[in-house]
Length: 200
Image (cartoon, one colour):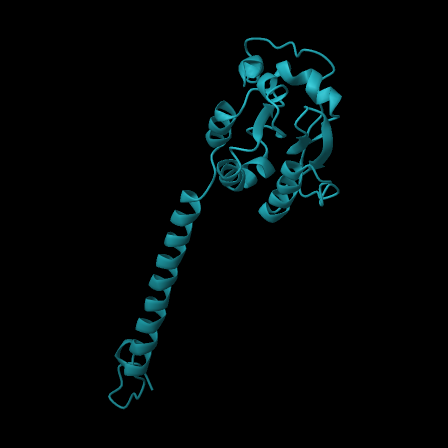
């Protein structure tokens, strides 16, 4: 039999009603998947924490010199704008700072700023975020390092305010490695990190 034969029984696929329904269903599923993916990407981009929020938080934090003499306990954080763990904790820390603003000082020191090299050396910062808990006299009572849940941070802060031993001093999470310089960093004007001495 040839294709042009009148006795041919082959039905073209486009005219088969079952195939039309299957094609439409497949196309509908593809459209729905594309919509869900688009919404997920959009929401994902909206919830990312930009490094500028860390800078804003640092500008709003208590200066170290004030925190050491004002008679309030202090949470001191060593951070960097490029630190993924620091960025991941930024929203929780912002909320914690609002909750405990009255009884505590919050100090943020950017490890990319040579100004903080003495503190980086004193507290042996080799990963960030690095948290130092200071009592009301400005003495370090504990340190933790890495990304950690809000509940652990709050439990430590409650104990710090009450003058009790911190329950989670061995707590630690994901960190961004950091190797402190041994002295002021000399940079050329063509170096993209030449702004380091201007970082807060």
